[in-house]
Image (cartoon, rainbow, N blue to C red; front, side, top):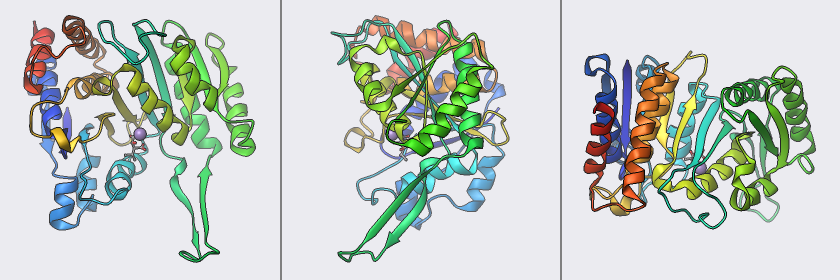
Amino acid sequence: MRIAVIGGDGIGPEVIAEAIKVLRATVADAAIETTSYDLGAQRYARTGEILPDSVLAELAAQDAILLGAVGDPNVPSGILERGLVLRLRFEFDQYVNLRPVRLFPGISSPLTATAAAPLDMLVVREGTEGAYIEAGGILRRGTPAEIAMQESINTAFGVGRVTRQAFAAAAARPRRKLTLVHKTNVLAHAGDLWRRTFEATAADFPEVAADYCHVDAALAYMVTQPDLFDVIVTDNLFGDVLTALGAAIGGIGLAASASINPERTAPSTFEPVHGSAPDIAGKQKADPTAAILSVALLCDHLGMTSQASRIEQAVADDLLERQGEWAGRSTAEVGDDIAERVSG
Ligand code: IPM
Ligand code: MN
């Protein structure tokens, strides 16, 4: 297994070190070959490079990419997001953005009054289209007559392939429920394509209970009645917003994500949802659990399902024992404790 490691900026390298520690404790050490890539704000500040084509070509030959976090107050907003994070998703055709939303037993949440742990849903967010592809442009910039167009591109191909993956994911879970989240009442064109695609695909998965929810209502229900949802499929931008709320529900230090190329024609990327948190960088204060759970998603994607379950179980046990408290541990100590559980 060849794994490209991009620690990135801020707390990224610290949490990724623990994720690799747990991976090595789970999978035979000799089976893993990691290569570190220096990408992110530091490299950009030093050389002006974001993701050189030569590095992209090397990454293409790896089995998976493990990414910590990128971003620094000194780099203008948008440069690393578009040049690195989104470029990887587009170049490697990572069209399934998988984001589990979970509330683990033992963890207190802003939803503790309305939701009882365990809560376990999965957002399948489209990753290569929608409002993210920079379609459109600006005319007469800086004048009173300026026009800014930012179009959302939805193709039958793109909507079809992610919808099919979402149905398959729902069919493999105990509840077998899939909700399309969109805004079909207002976004009539894109909404029509999503709805028709969803209904046509549903016919191929009669075992999955399929329903629909507008995105504004879905955000409200995620707070008031989150157990309405099992798997959600949605477009790139709605998925970004929904999963930010999802991370807040389960704890930002625990939210994992994967940008998957299901056909494996290129590597998939696994990364915690959280950012680089420069204010606590290098202090061993960051929770590495989201990065460790991202490694479980990596194992799952590469067919090591029992190893993935072992990591998830070790995390759940650790969290239960933690009872919402850090118990004074450092980033490395949390990694040690979880690594010990998977090997023991
Ligand atoms: C995320 C992030 C990215 C996104 C940014 C960094 C481009 O917010 O992974 O959710 O919008 O997808
Ligand atoms: Mn986001």
